[in-house]
Length: 41
Image 1 (cartoon, one colour):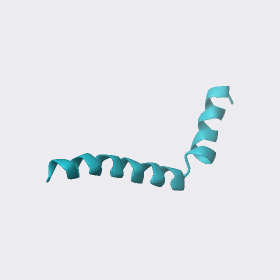
Image 2 (image 1 turned 135 degrees about the horizontal axis):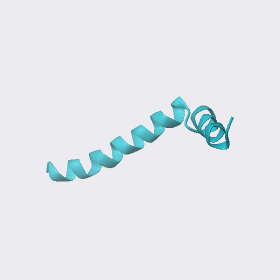
Image 3 (image 1 turned 120 degrees about the vertical axis):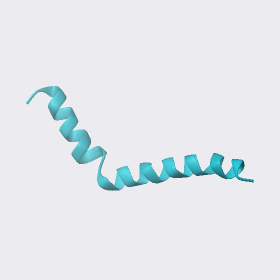
Image 4 (image 1 turned 60 degrees about the horizontal axis):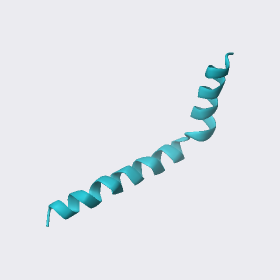
């Protein structure tokens, strides 16, 4: 395997796990919701 493929595989299996992706998505949702709440006042 090339270094690029190895790095991609490692990133997807050890760094960007399902739990990490869910946590990042939740943070993004909160980031979007805060300004939206200010506009709905």
